[in-house]
Length: 180
Image 1: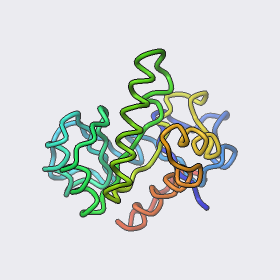
Image 2: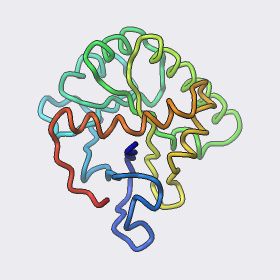
Image 3: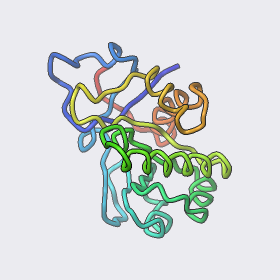
Image 4: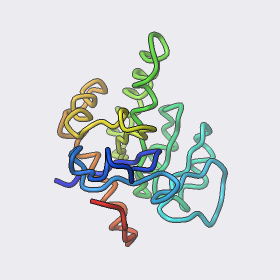
């Protein structure tokens, strides 16, 4: 199976010149290969992620974006069911909770667990990404599979989410030119 990740730094350095060393077929850099928008736009560069803490903004604007990111992980039924019907994917960056501590970390894990449960109930797709800011924050597919069990899903389902990014890019006919 091919695995993909989204990172938040340039990986052209010597430490990370081959994503296969980390178990990924391709790694996409935010802002270079995949574009994130935090405001509404009708003509985003493709592929695009819309990030908002307001589920209504995501729901109203999902037709222009392939990937949706709700940082609060609010289990909003209207948003999740609409995304499922339109074939949109939710991004769940592991950096959302991995680098927090104590109560904040446990609260975020609880929110993501509930969000994933709703996504599964309404058949909405989601992907886990590292959104790593440095080489030390990257997690391998095996690690992500293990982390997925925290959210009451199987390791296989967590690892399968890593292949969905490749599927969505093929579906919109994007040719990626990343290393790998």
